[in-house]
Image 1 (tube, rainbow, N blue to C red):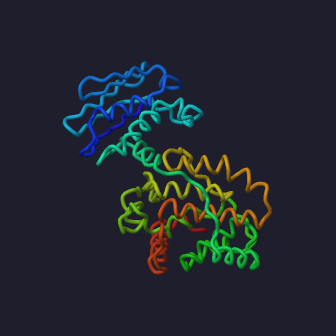
Image 2: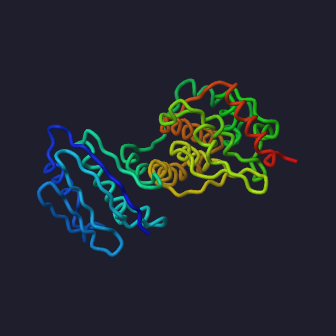
Image 3: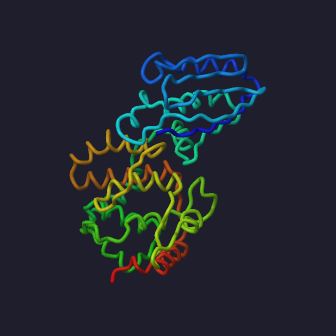
Amino acid sequence: MSDTIFYSMKLKANITPKQAFEKILKAVKPKGVTKNWNVSTEGNALYIDFGDEVSESFCLAFDKKEASGSCKVSFPMEGKLFEDEKKNEWKTLIAILHSIKFLCSEINVEDDYDIAGEYFKSLDYSFDIRELTQDENARLDRLFQEGYKNHEAFLLKIFSEDTKRDFPKHWTDALGPCILLRAPFPKISAVWETYVYETSTLKNKSLREIYYNRNWYQINGEYHLGGDPPAEIYTFCLGIGRLFSSYDFVDNTFGRGNNVTKYYNDKFLPLIVQTDAYGKCRMAYQFMLSLYDYCKFRFVGKDVINEMNTSFDKEHPSDLPK
């Protein structure tokens, strides 16, 4: 499979195309996925022949300080080849474009699915979990003493306290201190997606305006959600969803979601499975707060949240328990 990457950039006033090309040439190593690449320059243009039968030749041609174009690149959807940047031609080309970002006053990389754009952004970020503050440690101790000793119930209690939410009646059983979530629990994603109201990219619009209004479609009188959520919502749900045993999130990781996935699998999971109940609550709380920071979330008041819950229940009565 291949994916078409679209790219455009404008060099800074004191930078020449030659300087950008020198940086790219240094980034193309004679090993791994780039060992068969043939890179050449001619005037204000740089060419890459990938040496395979899948990817098109790449051309970066500057007119004065500006360049733009597109290139179809081999794109493995999943598996080890997708995960390994050293063997993934698609990731490698985007990383090379990212390597000259600091030379540009403007640069944009995207594709038809927003995968390339999100992966390009992800190269500016790394994910790690932070320590709890004094107030957060006090809250952890308080809730644990109140009986919230299962980390799933602990997190849902945190959600409800953070937003002062009145949960719909058919969700209240999930807020008990000892409850273990199971598959019949209705749409656990709604527990956090409906209160996550604004991110740095949602531009002061409610989540309903961004995520719901155009993506609901009707089949046999029932509403279904189509389309993908904004990247921040995807990343947050991907990370938090792993902490809930009943939540099945489709994991086509890329971009910032891939950073979270790697951290969870390589560092977080080996530690949380070895600790006691208090340790699991602590680590889950740290993970959740770190995702807040990573996705730049902030919350709004109770009235907006409850209005969203009420609208959801009215529009989707088939989701309510009989």
